[in-house]
Length: 199
Image (tube, rainbow, N blue to C red; front, side, top):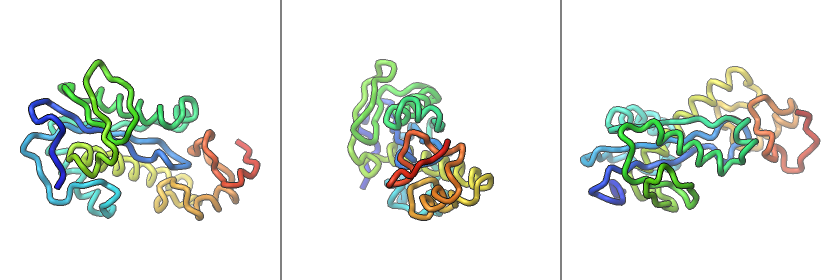
């Protein structure tokens, strides 16, 4: 059973990201403030849910949340500042969208940078422990998946509709065959043996 939040008497947001390990597309972050009476039988770590369940939960979370924000940090920025910094920047930008700002921030994972002097706590595997982090993980994942499905229309040969930019064998074979797209992250090792790629 997931707990609602860390501090029951504070206005608290959960934040998480999706797509850190992908070879293409943005890293997407979300921040969510849930009401104190929120519960849903399905809500857990997005990786434990089917895509169908995640998509069904998306509008439930959006309608129930007191506030939420979602941010894509694009490939160019990832390549400039690295994926960890891009993930944290995405979380900060998502928190920027919350009204009112939270009094406490709960982060999935073990790395964060202070935001606006608001106290925070990193929780390893937090999306399997707290509802607001699980909600953020679902929004980050669904928004990113939908974005990758749009990009798939432009570059169907990489099959992003299915792999969402993750380094599957099929995705790597397509990179080997067609070379990288403008949506591939130049700073990532796109092929294991790093065959010479011309950007």
